[in-house]
Amino acid sequence: MNPSDQKHFTAADYVIFALLLAASIGIGLYHALSGGRQRTTQEFLLADRSMSCLPISLSLLASFQSAVAIIGVPAEVYAHGTQYWFIGCAYFLGLLIPAHVFIPVLYKLQLSSAYQYLELRFSKAVRICGTLAFIFQTVVYMGVCVYTPAFALNAATEFELWGSVLATGLVCTLYTTIGGLKAVIWTDVFQTVVMFAGQLAVIVVGVHQTGGVSEVWRKVREGNRIAALDLNPDPTERHTFWTLGVGGVFLMLSLYGVNQAQVQRYLSARTEKEAVRSCYMAFPSLQLSLALSCVMGLVMFALYCGEDHSDKLATSSKDAMVIYFVMDMLQGLPGLPGLFVACLFSAALSTISSAFNSLATVTMEDLVKPHFPAMTEARATLLSKALALSYGLLCMAMAYFTHLMDDSVLQVALKIFGMVGGPVLGLFCLGMFFPWANATGALAGLGTGLALAFWVGIGSIVARGSGARPLPAGCNATSALHAAFANVTLSRPSGLHRLYSLSYMWYSAFGCFTVILTGLVVSFLTGPMKEEDVTPGTIYPLMGKLVCFLPEHLKKKLCCVTPLGQTLPAQHKEGNGLASPQEDGASRGEADRFLPELRASALVEHETTV
Image 1 (cartoon, rainbow, N blue to C red):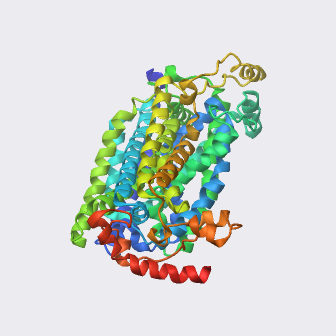
Image 2 (image 1 turned 30 degrees about the horizontal axis):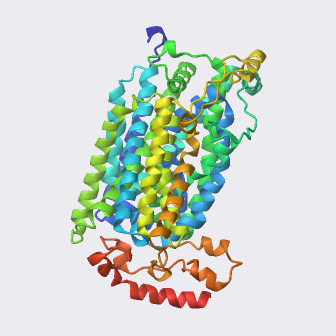
Image 3 (image 1 turned 120 degrees about the horizontal axis):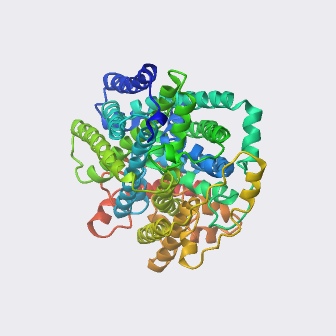
C-alpha cells in the first residue's frame, strides 16, 4: 500500500476503541460477580429465564447484525445498487412466523437446547445430527465474523491484522466465559447502541462532505444505484424481489426460528409473551439497521462514484473499500474513526459472543449431559465455561482460513447460512408440521438436504456461479446507459452450470424443501408414525388448520389433531439421553416409561378439543 494513502488513528480514536473493549469486559465482570455468580448451568446458559423483551430484542438484532453486515451491505450497494434493500420485505414473515409458530412450541417444552426438540420428536440420532450441523455452521461463520473487521481495518490502517483478530477473540471469549448469557445479552444492548452511533456519524459527515442530501441523490440516481423492483422469476438471478423477498424469508426462518443462538434468547425470557414481544420489537431495529447500512453504501458511492480504489489498498476486496471510505472521510475529525471502528468491532463482538454461548449450550446439553447424567451442577457449569473458552480459541483459528475465500464477506456468510441452516430448518419443519414423519425419514431428509446444498454451494464456488458483475462506475447520466447494456452480451449457463448459478439467497429454501420432501417420502415408505407415538407438544397443528374442511376421521387418519402445548415430565424436559418412542430395543423401553402419562393427558385434551 502507498504510504501516502495510509490512514492513521489518533489518540482519541484509540481511547474510544479501548473504552469499548473495557466496557464489554466490565459488563462480563459485573454479571460474573452479581446475582448467582454464574454457579449454575441455568444461570450461565439461560440467564435464569429472567430476561425482559427489550434487551432480548436488541440482542436478537446484534447477534445477526455482525461486522459482516456493516461492511458487506454498504460494499454490496456501492458495487451493485440498492436491490439488496428488498430483503427488508422478508423480515416481516421472517419474524412473524417464529413468533407464532416456533416460539410457542419450543418455549412450552422448556428446553435448554433447540435440538432437544429433535429427540423428543424423532430420536437421539436426529438430535445429534442437528447439533453437529449447527456446530459446523457456527464455527465456520465465526471465522468470517472474527476475520472481517480485522482484515478490513488492516487494509486501510496501520492496525496489525492478527493483533486485531486476537483482541476481538480474546475479549469476547473472556466476558462470555465469566459472565454467561446475561453478560452476552447486556453487552449486545450496549454494542447495538455503539453500532447505530457509528453508522449515523459516518452517514451525517459523509452527506455533509458530499454536498448535501440532494447532491447524494443526484449522483446515486445518475450512477444507476437506485434499483427498481425486479420481478424476474429466474432463480439464477443473484438479486431480484423474489430471491430477496421470498428466498430471504427462509434465510430469516433458519436464523430466527431454529438457530440455537436466537432460540436461546427466546428461552431466557421470563414468559412466552415476553419472548413473542421480543420478536416484534426486533423488527423495527432490523429495518433501521438495514437502512443505515444501505444509505452508507449510497453515500460512499456519491463520494467515489463507484471507482475502484483497490490499487490504494493492500487488497482487491470491495469490502475493504468501506473502511477506506470511513478513514478517508473522517480523517480530520478526531474520535470519529475510532467510533466507527468501535461500531464495527461491537458488531463482531456481539455476534461472536452469542455464538460462543450457544455452542457451549448445545455441546453441553446435546453431547455431554446425555452421556454423563450424574454430573454435578458445579462440574457442569465449570465444563460449560471451559467449552465457551475452547470454542473461542477454535473460532480464532478458523479466521485464518477465511482469507482463502474470494467472494464478498456478505455472500460467504449467507451461503454458509443457506447450505447448513436451510436443511436444519427443513428438519424442524418436518417435525412440527407433519405428524406422520418418522426418525428414518428425518435422517434421510437431513442427509440428502445437506449433500445437495453443499453440492450446489461448492459447485458455485468452483464454477464461480451466483456472482454478479458490478455496475459501471461513474456519477453521470452516461453511466446509466452503460449499465443498461452491461448484461446484454452475457450468455446464460446451461446444464449443471445453471444449477450452480442458483442465487445464494435460494439456498435455504432449496435445502429446506429437499429435507421435507425426502423425509415425507422415506417416512411413508418405512411406515408413517402413528398419532399415539408422537410426543404431545411437539406438533404445531398446521396440517389440521389447512385441511379443516375434511371430516374428523380423515383428519385423524392424517394425524392432524395432535394437541399443542402439553407440558412434559421433568425427565423429558431435561433431555438427558432419553430415547424417543420410535427408537428400538432398550432405548425404546426406557422412553416408553414416560409415555403413558403423556398419552393420558393428550387424550384428555384431545377429547375436549374434538
